[in-house]
Image (tube, rainbow, N blue to C red; front, side, top):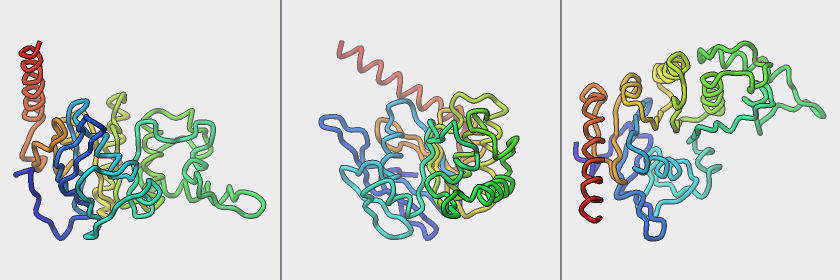
Length: 262
């Protein structure tokens, strides 16, 4: 599929059209066209410095594009802030998770939207509903009353994802959710993404380096290289080998150019 243009689809919940981003003399993104369908899981992959994090920041309202537009549910939007994007159903889960380690799981689930029974927090209601929601999503933890600091990396990641879904997010942007995780913890997160796919009411973009893991759960894969999407394929139409070879070819090209200019 050509990545210079994308034809609109009726089931698109999110599109970027000709997005570019410049920081002074540095260009991070060049004419990026991306689409995300309703209930779809899209893998956004690429080497370090390819522009993945920059695109994520634009999609969640952290920073505006230099050029291009974002279309959400068929309407053009210009995010002024992360809060505005969140209010429209877009939630980003970063590697640092934005969880408070000293607080319990259920307090983290309700962070900044606590139930209050004046003059006290309604801890009983938050605890009950948090436990029910986590169970519904298949997230297994020892207790919702446990401090987040006592949980494993995979459990913390699952809590952050569940909190976003519970806050009525319709588009989840997951920034390296499998980074620095063992096989068992990584499998937990992949299972959680599969569960979101089965629900069909949440669309997901996963930024990742592990191509094999991405292909396990994604419907479609976009490869971002030097600020441009160079590949857009259904997951079953590509392979970890093809993706790896494309990134290696990019590395070799950059190395040759550096040697010529030395």
